[in-house]
Length: 557
Image 1 (cartoon, rainbow, N blue to C red):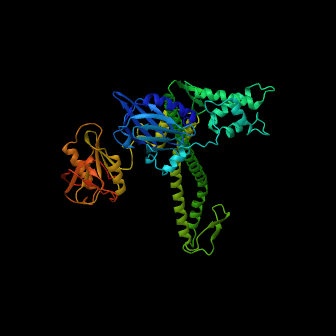
Image 2: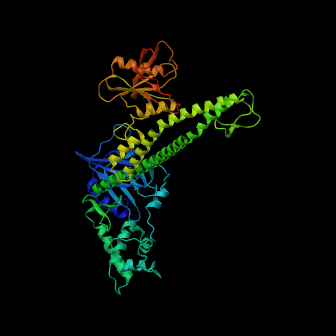
Image 3: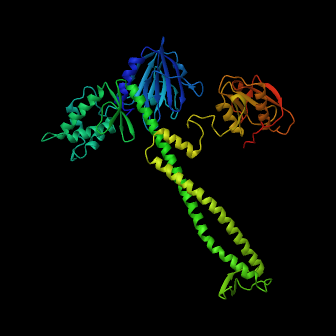
């Protein structure tokens, strides 16, 4: 209920108190579907954070925030430097408008992937959009801002009689006691799922007697409406694994956190929901993976055990081979696919044979089959304990999932299952297997691209401005990026090692000496329309090196 209209009204009131009169000093995005607006006045600063994703869509204030040095993209640059004159919410829909000196920033906080932020001039003419999923025109904005007068909505002057008359339209020939929720949803969809459930539960516990049930329900709706509108304390609630924001406590939900600051409660709610969502995603991924691996290990183990039991049948191979080899006419080809003779006890036996081979050749074939069967059995005996151990481990991990583990345990298990080696699973450009990685001396690491598209990603998205960028001069080859986590500059020896690796991954690999150009990544640019891997270098330096990999390193794929 973070984007519920009543919630947004309280947020707008808080934003109006905190932001009106301040100047917009920055506006950018550094995470998908999230817009950050910095508002300042002298030494005072506060951030407005707006989320447009379907599940966690929200709009709240934040006191502490730092713009990332990388991956941040400026947005709505026209409003930077503008003073905030007013903030309003439209009564008929979830639309918030921030009025500045020369512009209006509309936040369309609809759900279902229809949310958007639009910058307009003071006449509501669209100038720019945040997501740009849909192209908005002046007519679109005008329609959005125009209320539908035919829709009944609760308002601050609404009376119980007004609501009762409206409810009567939906209660003809309907058992109001059994269909309370359906009636409220149809008559007043603005109330929303959880507040509707709350009203329904309150209504069921009321003693109606001979009182008109519609009147009782109307009075209850008005009472809860005014409690929602006048709330001065806000709640993060939980039911099972679901976290919701609410303007009032709700029956059946436990209170996780409450505060007089609506922004603080929304931030906490969003954080808990993201954590719960992350836990769900990890559990879902782990469960699917572990169950598939366990099924595969069980199938393999069953097959190995069956093959081991079938080894007893191969003992016939030795008997048949010995009997065939002992025949006087062993060089004669048999006429039938079965050779009938007697075993050592005088009993008649039927030996399958190939009519294309002599009896001795058939005997030799059975000796080969016997030898192969024993070798396979030996391998199976080695593999069975391995698969038994693997299956036991997988079942143990599945049992851990079934015991409701916390996020830290889930992430540790995720690392074990997928053999990740980093402390955190989300933030890891450096651990990415997309590039060839060569640890060098003094904490330096060289990353080398694998193909043209991969080179683009390495140079234009992965590399940092002060990383050194290498490429064999005048020939085709991989991009290479030298990175160090500290402030130490690379020595001549490290630069030469990095250049030698870059030369090795070029078409000049077999040359005795190759010139390699290098510069800081900030002096690399990609011309518009250039092919993948094509860049322009400025302020280049050149070093002559012999192509090769450092001692102890093997060729990466």
